[in-house]
Length: 140
Length: 471
Image 1: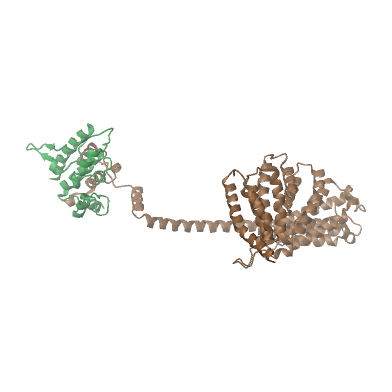
Image 2 (image 1 turned 30 degrees about the vertical axis):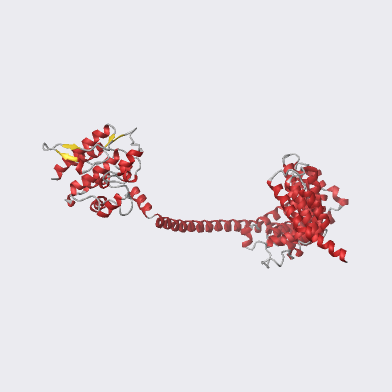
């Protein structure tokens, strides 16, 4: 089960890696944007807010800032929530959340954390990542 | 499934989910590569954070507590280190003092024995000391006397070493007392020895803050020297000796202002909250009130010593420089600013010619300050005298609107008001406020002060005039 999850997930990372190699950041990676075809292949959807990187770093214009706010907060990286410049590592964070949920079948964020993220706080005590906490607990 | 999330896979997910971007995988490719390594059971990039990183995070999490703890630890460490260092230093100083004291003691014993055997009543014609070089019966020859003086001087120097601060803790004030007693025993022959011992004991006593004893020793030494090498016998002495006498001379008198019992009277005003004056305040009082005569004494002594020193050591010698510097200070204290400038300039003539302008400035401001102190002490006449002298020099050397000149005028007006000479004060203030183009902020402030004081004192003057007219 886990092996299959990871195989599928690796396809996702490969697809995102390809985008990254083209200096494109997806910026809205989430389970609903990841489709698995009948043939077992992964398709990424919704590059709608994807951004071309300028010199490896996305410059937030006024427009993308607004759209940046509109993305799905549960999977957004802290820098996306905070509205600071983003890069390929932002997609890595989203992928991490997806991977966590894929492996544990639990939402990565607690209910309060999700609420906090929706109001734009991610690094407060409430906004701390459930996944991080449980991972740390199990890693110890 | 949670249970399955163990080990390396945990760390991979954690690394992807790190809040700090820099610690995450740089791109999805890196994440994929690490996952593949995990699947192949290879070592993964993601790993438990290093101890340093975890400590750093802990510190950031508990910044206040950690800072407080660190401060506490540092304080304790510093305290321990300081105490240990202090103890070591004290031990070293004690050991050094003991060694020096022992040396001084040995030396002193040797010299005491030597002098006692050399004394006629003890040696009975024998000469135990340097029998080959100094034939018996020629005990009184000058060569021998000089030898003895040199030995005595060295002994005194050793004694003085035994008197440094750590030495005093061990009660090593005795050797110089011994030296003085011994020299007294020698009678006339020991005159120079006695003077030298007294002189050195005076130095030590001054150092030990026993100024009254020091003064009496200095005076006695000076009396002996003057008796022994009076004007008629002065020519017979070598240059350095005469210079030494001159220095002793000035020292005995120059130290006087600080050692006067009258110095304990204090100008600290009873209106101030403090009743007991600080020691430095007493010194100041000695300097400016009761000890004026003693300063004159000191000045005379220096003036007498100066030509001797110049002749024997030359103009460039540091003795001359020191005396010139001291004289400059005394002139300043006594309010003789022309002389102060001359001696200050003489001192700095060859070495730092640029000091001259600095001296003017310094001396100008100290002149004003002295006058103000005299005013505080209630001697407004002296204050006016002092500020007039300062003002005369200002008039020669500084432009009209120089703040120092303006301030001098302003202060003088104040003294005149205290003296009741309101008309003079008003004239002065009106001259002051008529000054054109103040050159600086200080000058403008001085002018403003002048206006304020003028405004304050116009009315009283009118009332005084009215009162006198009514009479």
